[in-house]
Image 1 (cartoon, rainbow, N blue to C red):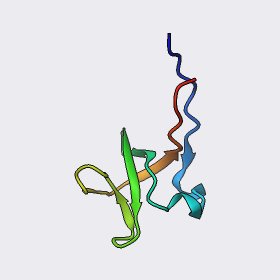
Image 2: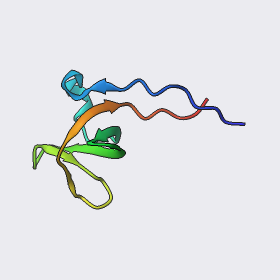
Image 3: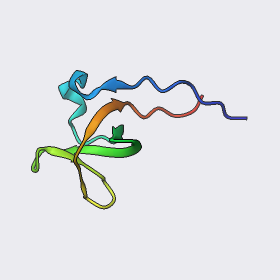
Length: 67
């Protein structure tokens, strides 16, 4: 059985600069969790599948595998 831990959400303002390296992160946009990454060319968060810019990201968390 896989169990999930509490997700340690952090305000987007606390995001370390090293996380803006294209890696996928768990982001909270308005009222939904989404997978996103920083696009340095567009200077914004995007959905890596649709390339849609995420407008209102307010929290972030690293993606970690289940234990």
